[in-house]
Length: 188
Image (cartoon, rainbow, N blue to C red):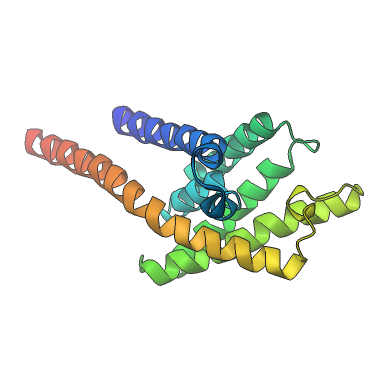
């Protein structure tokens, strides 16, 4: 039991580190025309949403906390803790959606990603407005509605591709867990 829990925790942590790597280096290595789309994608949020969809509330919340800490340390955020709060809230809402709608399909994932993107971005925007700071994503003169639509579209496209990869990784971890459980039952 402990080995499978530590294996899942390791996979989540590696997924978060991979998301940090992609978020920090992807913009530098791809062309500018594609970079404007990938620059809007919050890869840590997408990993947090994926873990929330796996119906494990404790892991989802802890993933949100760790993702927030990684995001704040990566960006040197002027408001430390807002990212963690927004990721934890996104994980909670995603887990609630996954519990209410038992079926795990593309539509449920799209709903979870859309709602989480709206919550994450809105919460950050509210805190920036309260503290009278300029929201970095809107500094280029982009309108608020266009920014939300652009962020949602970018997250939906990126999540589709990312979740295919994560499904394969987590499917392998789930298969290992099933084999261990089967071996335990045979011993009893």
